[in-house]
Image (cartoon, rainbow, N blue to C red; front, side, top):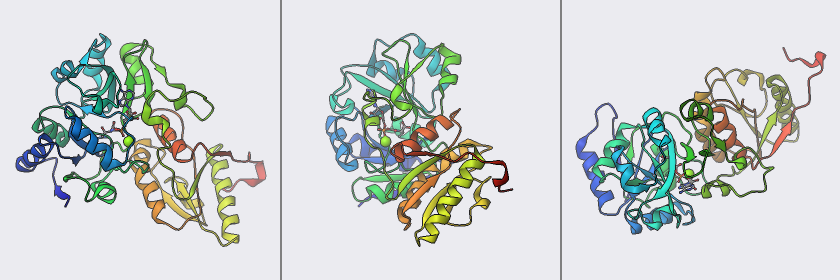
Length: 358
Ligand code: TXA
Ligand code: MG
């Protein structure tokens, strides 16, 4: 029932785009690639289409959708009281992985904003996404195209696993580039506040507009406050096997995870290990998955959700992950990993000199 169409970003087939665009115009659902993750597209100005989106994802309807646009003029149609810094931010980061929140105009139905008077807006850079938005009339709401509670999809196959039979069409444009959802910046407060970390970091934003604040709930489990992005309060995704993040120096982490995996092996249990290019070879027990290289954390961001999905298919009783530096995209990586772990972290024992493994 769900039509799956391959589409090549270097040679976009206009007939496929216009077919997908008409489905959206008629109130249907089309999943499509963006540079961050696959989105589940619907006409953002159509209340009924928003309802279908929530139903297909199994998502609570108080969790607002991001409206995707393809040109800057479209922003003025859906947002009001747009603060002056927006222009600079849009100039630097749009199209791209930045979502900004504004007061909404009357044009945007409450179904799309989860009942809020604000609207989240993003202009994606992916060319398939941009052409689809234009073909659909210019305003496409798109949450990540996963079933609520599963990792966001970074391939069309992930979308098919979750939504086959529940939506009209999937545009298969291959693997996405970034692999983690966009940075969300609330422009309705002063200074603007980051509600969700992504590839556009606080440093990058501050270079353009000066100080930004960060929703404290992003940083860890300690905060008692509710997150300001409604979607961040839901336990996004819990792997079937319990995930634990091991923290220490890299060497300490490797030693600790080796010991945990060996202990499990002795008990006849299998564990999963989230390792990197640099550390993969040091693990002798457990199901080891190389998530990317520490020399380029973008590779880790790109693979994270696929690796979490793979572990859900495996018979492991626990998963241990190394941790990553909280800088650059590392912020977003650790934010998503900590959510998946339900904030379970353990400290690796400090190394005494004789214990060095190499
Ligand atoms: O990269 C992305 O942003 C992807 C792609 C498809 O563009 N989309 C995405 O959408 O991640 P979704 O629905 O999975 O996450 C949207 C987040 C949710 O946490 C939601 O609560 C928050 O944005 N959000 C949306 N509108 C909001 C608003 N008006 N105020 C506060 N938070 C809002
Ligand atoms: Mg999502």
